[in-house]
Length: 169
Image (tube, rainbow, N blue to C red):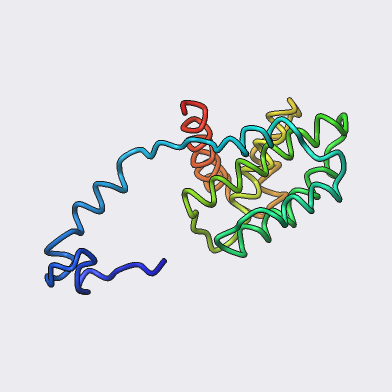
């Protein structure tokens, strides 16, 4: 979606400049919390994870992605997470698949912006290790994904806020 400039004609059709018409109203709407309701398919999918990485990757490729960088991050990170940590394969796959659904939903509903993917990779890594109760520090994740700990905190906060909204739905 193209972002409208302050001096462009307003999207409402009034003929006024955007800054003199709907800019403040749109900014206020962006500040309001968004209600997020998982679809019945998303709810059902969370209960039926793939049994192996080939099925997982097939499911990942079948998902709708508004931006190739979101899909590419998932294709690179999720197999890495699966291989990086020793844990029961079924539990790893269940957590990984639920994280994929969360990441996909987050991307579709929030359209996150990033220049480097390391912040969200580290945040998803942190989410994965917390879900499996694996002890990893933000400093470890910072070194692993070559990103500042503050960036990890910010990205993790965005994901966490999205998950809280999903849980409340």
